[in-house]
Length: 91
Image 1 (cartoon, rainbow, N blue to C red):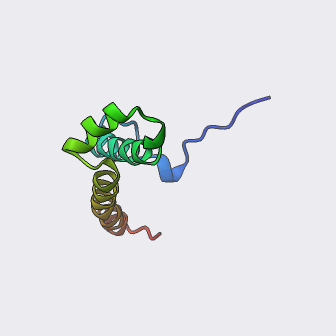
Image 2 (image 1 turned 90 degrees about the horizontal axis):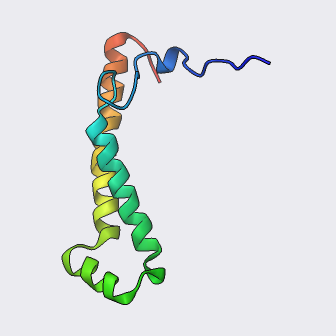
Image 3 (image 1 turned 90 degrees about the vertical axis):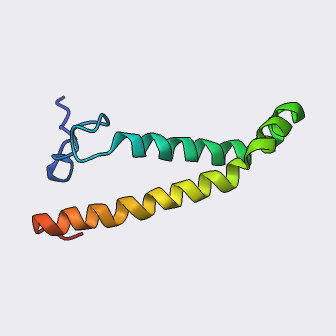
């Protein structure tokens, strides 16, 4: 049984997450940190109260995570659209 390659025409320019392709690795990392902040906020009920106080003293991870995630997405989506428009592709 042969496995098909998942690299199709839509992924041809996306080499890896190191920034050598069309992806910006540092934005992926920042989005990952933002997503983890939201997860921490949702599961903070299970975190010991002492750790909760220490984290929430400096930052509200839920608000930070959602804010950063949407700011980055607001940059990435138009950037991708403009790159596709420059190549003559739509969608």
